[in-house]
Image 1 (cartoon, helix red, strand yellow):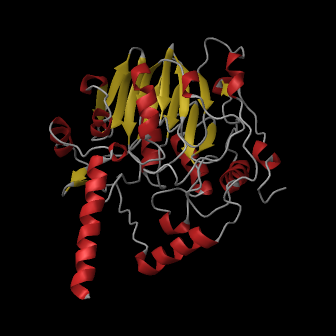
Image 2 (image 1 turned 180 degrees about the vertical axis):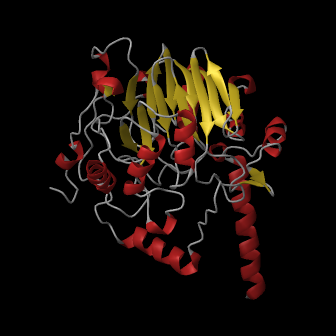
Image 3 (image 1 turned 90 degrees about the horizontal axis):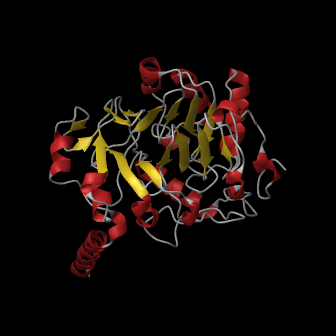
Length: 371
């Protein structure tokens, strides 16, 4: 009996590893030139990337089992009751040519038009934030995202390799319309496996920068982790990004727990005209790697954001809070701390330099606790 059970576990493990190795959606581990640059990074220790400050994700067996139970048996309005309104048809609207434009696709996928360049950030535009199409599906939108509507883009910027930010199917559909990919260290290995030529990929360590014509891209720290399979935890880097144009300066937080890096980034590169700040999929059990909404607002102050938009919500159910809680808590905190927060609808193309709406559009959607 015992020998048979052990044999079963061995076969299951081997089968799982073989599946991961042969399934392209899991990506690829860094090797060759990727590893050479990784090994030279001051943020790489004992075979893994590390955060600036201690960052524990260990919930213990009891905490893990309790979390699994809550995900399985407690709903708590974690999904909207009706399809979310979108404004993908509004892109033809007239906006001043000299101002940068932003289009938010929900969660952390954003298109920035700045200085005649199109920069697409974390283009998770697919339906499943997992390696399997039947798990962690996107909330239903009134009109699905049509990748054919995404223009030819000059750059794709990636924050890290988690499934809700780096989507295999989206990359396959977009890669031939992308001029260049910019990633944290090691993430380019996934792209190469998916058919993106190495010469169209540039990996940056924290605080490294480069020029995209007149635009400067700077990889900056975040407090998070990485991995797409069982054995690749923290083998690739995670980052936030500074996008510095001739007249406007943007900040994208990526995924991050609260930490001193926000103030450091603000001191080096702030103030920012507009910041896209993580606000969602949090829990006190993993607060070290995902900010609470009140921390999101504080981080916006730390970096010196003149205006900010909460992201990382309204697309996937990856935590235990209600789907509208991130926006409600952030809005309340922003008002109390006098932070200028805007809440554009999904798909709205707007110019941050002239956009001031605080329309709580989510309250009109069925399936929330504020109706």
